[in-house]
Each structure stands twice: as structure tokens, then as C-alpha cells.
Image (tube, rainbow, N blue to C red; front, side, top):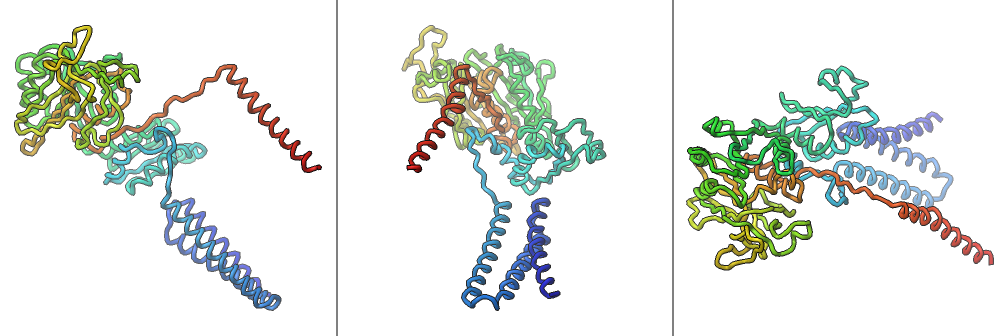
Length: 504
């Protein structure tokens, strides 16, 4: 009897130990030596219990039944082992399909690129109530899965108030991102905010983007449709510093300047300003020049010194594609991008350019590498007489499409590299058009490329579109009669018909 009890206890212990190995992994999220030992001992205990059970029944059954039972037992053990192995593998290597239209629940290219290149340890503490941790865990699991250098833990401020005080947490649902001595707080959870915090704590040095002022340029503080405040805010979300620069007052470009942005000047520059900018770029500076058809001549002269011509024209697109999006022929659409440039590599979304001039590389490139980033369609042209009420292509005066409207000029200068991006339009990145298709991504990609932050060049994290369904009273009544009355009535009628037919 004691022998039988011992065998029973071994079988029960095997089941308990086997379940313990799975539960322990589910809690710790790490499959280690303890899990392997428990899994092997559990399977051994279960196998021993099955063996003893059929051994004791040997006298009461035929040899054929014993053999059949043994085969069944072995098959059960094999099935359990296979299921356990599959469960283990699927927790370590899983496949997810995001079927939303915009890939809303997949990490953006920007985030994946950052995580793939991450070479510093980053610890994330999520201060959430125990009952509210699930939503944050789904997003943090995505980050943790894609980088071995990411780790996170949840802290319930009610259960561990001392840790919350240590990190200065003042509200629930707050994340603290740490790497080395750097720390960033994320109070509103989103992929964009969390990715920006990762960039900030792992970046070695802040980059400063200066916007030139004093010539009627677009204002980075104006939040109206003509301003550049959304562009400025977006640059700051990429964890760059944004400042204004007036060369008349300061007389030189600061050493801290990473990128100099000249956005649609309306008047000519003061004496010496163009020379200062040109000399700074030639020493390895990075600059972004954005003009419009009515640009002053000296900004065109600056671009010409780097072997690109800014046309005294306006690009017209007669394809009719713009009308699909409420735009006229004066707002060409671009889908043709130079895929060899990091700024536009993999770029497939459309971009809009209201009132843009042509940008043409000179035949004599002067040792510069000049690439045409953007080209309009074949049914476009550069209209030289764009102030007239009616425009038409004039073979003797106008530039035939496709027309280049943005160019990247580069050249090695000692240890540094000259990088200059010239756009024939500045409207595409103003507040009024910031969210149009890929406009904002193209602008930010250009800034990050010039700032030598290529890990930030990609499509930004998605935001959910407002796709609410608005129903009229007639729609509500139709749905009521269909769902509440018609469908149940059809089911009842079918049931009655089948009942009558079976009764016969």
C-alpha cells in the first residue's frame, strides 16, 4: 500500500512541477534553468505515473490491450511534449499581423530603426495602477521584443509610494526612461512620445537648428496657416533645439549651429550676409534653403554659387491629379523621388507643392554631387509667365516636365561634408499644409539628414484617424428593424418549417 501511495504522489508531483514550469515562465517572462529542470522533472513524473498505472493493470487485461494502452500512453506523452515545446517557441518567436489600414498597431519605421541600432542600455519604469497596466504593457512589449537593450518594469504608486517619490511622480500613467545619467519623463503614453524619450536619453549631443530672420521669412512662432510653428514644434519633438538667427544683429553664424534654415525670404539680404552664409557652408556647414516663385534675386545667387539654378518660374501640373485632392494645376503632386538619397529612400506617399519654382542642377557641377530629390510628373512644366490669367506651355520659354523642384548638393570639405538642400517651395511645410500626405515627413527627414541624424529619417509614428460613423434617425430605425426584428423572425420561421417537416 505504501508503494502505491508513493507512486501516486510521484505522478501528482510530476503534474504540479510541469504546471509550475509554465506558470513560472508566464510570471518571469524568462525561460531559464529552473524552467528546464521543472519541465523535465514534470514530464518524467507524469510518464512514471502512466507507466505504473498500466503496470498494475497488467494482470487484469490481455497483452493486446496492454500493448494498446502503452501505445496510447506513449502517444499522450509525445503530444504533451510537442504541445509544451510549441507553447515555448510561440512565446519566444511569435508572428503578428496588423490589419488596420494605416498599420496603427505596428511600430513606425523610425522606431524600429532606432531600436535596431540601439547600443545603450535603457530602463523604463512605468508607474501604473495594477488594474491599468495592460494597455501600456502591449506597447512596451513591442519595444522590449525588438531590442535586447530595452528593459521595463511596472511600479504601482499605491503599493510602492517610496519609488514614486524617488522619481518625482505626480500622476498615474507616467513613464520614466533612463539611460546612464540621462532621464526623461513621459506623461502621455504614445509611440511618438516614447520614441522621442529614447532618442533624447541616448543622444550624445543636442543639435541646434537656426531659422534665419530679418528678411520676411516665415515665422516659427506664428500658429496661423502661413506660419511654421508646427514645423518648429515637430523639430523639437525630434529632440533638437530650435532658435532664431538675425545676422544683422549677431553678424556671424554661431558655432552651435547644426543646420541653418532659410525659409522663403521676401526681401534682399543686407550687405555681407550672403557672403557670411556662403563662407559658412563652404567650411562644412549644413543648410536648408526654401524659396517661392517670387523670391529675391540674391537668394537665387546664393544657390547658383553651389551650382543649382532657382528658376524664375512656377511649376504647373496639367495632369489633373491635384483636382482629386481639391488642388489646382498650380499645386503639383510628386510621387517621383530619388531612392538613392536617405531623405527620400523608401518614400512612397504623395507630397504637395503649392506655387513652386523649378530647381535645376547646372551642367558644370563644380565638383559637387547634385541629386534631384523631387520631380513632378510628365504633364507638368515650368511656366515663366505665371502672372498671366491663362497659362499654357510655351516651347521656347518654359521648362518641359518632369521638373525638378528640390535638389541635394554635397561635397567633402576636409573632415566635414558640405550639405545643402534647396527647395523651390516653402508652402508645403507651413502650418496650413503640414498634415497633407507626406509633407511633414519629407521636411523632417530633410532636417534630420542635414543634422546627421539619419536614424530619425523615416515615416513618423501613426496617429489614429477619426473614423466615427454618423447615423441619421432613419439609419437607426433601419438597423433596429433588421437586427432586432427581421433576423430573429427569419430564424424562428426557419425553425418552425424544419419542425413541421420533421414531424411529418
